[in-house]
Each structure stands twice: as C-alpha cells, then as structure tokens.
Amino acid sequence: MSFKSDKCFGVMSGKPVTSYESEEEAIDGINYIKDHFNKSVPMSYYKCSKCGYYHISPKSRETESKLCDCKDENGEAIQLYDTRKAAIIRATVLAKKTGVRHNVYACPKSTGFHVTIENLDSSK
Image (cartoon, rainbow, N blue to C red; front, side, top):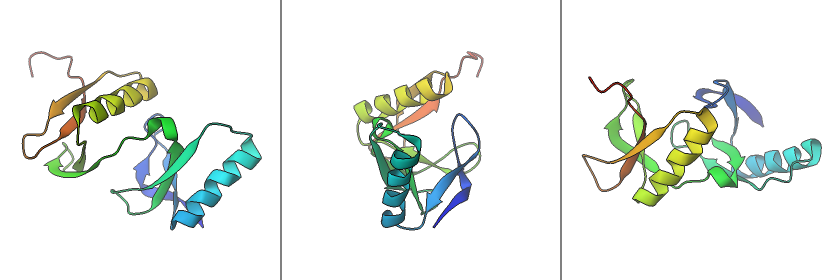
C-alpha cells in the first residue's frame, strides 16, 4: 500500500513523496507508473534512510549514500557519499532538479563527501 510521506518531500515540488512499505509494493508502483502513464524512463526503488520506507525514482538520479553523523542546520543527519565522483553526480542531479548550484566537500568527521548548496554570500 502506498501513502504520502510525512518526512520526505520532492526537491522541486516540495510536496510529500509516495512511500511504500515493502520492496514488492515499490516494484508494483514502478509497474503502475509504466502501465498507466506510458513512462519508458528506467525507474528504481530504494529504502530511504530518513523515513525507513521505500521510494521510487528515475535510475538516472541514483547515487549510493548513507547517513552521516554530521547534521544540517535543522539537526538532521546528512548524506555521506563514499567517493567524490558519487557526490559530484548527486550535486549535478540536484542542480538540474532545482536550478541551484551545489558544491561537494570532504566530510570533516569521516571518510567520504557531502553535497551542499553553493553559498554565494562571501561574507559567511
């Protein structure tokens, strides 16, 4: 059974994303999209580290990551990418999605990289 998340929101829309309780339900969601919306874009599913449920997205947006001990300005754990290349791919996807440039930086606490929105204010 699918439902709208109360923790995860679309980057561009700001609206709750659809969540699925199991892998099987996420696969059914992908098949439903293909069948009812005539989508030929390759899709994949993933277990969200933020909410614990499954979400689906285009395969082109896939980037392996895990939650880090580092926190964002809201106190939420942020994603950690194993390689600079993976973080750059994610930054590029986010920039295309949002129209805002993103930067990659080395994690100060562990081995890996984070993605952040570019700070254009040089006084900070």
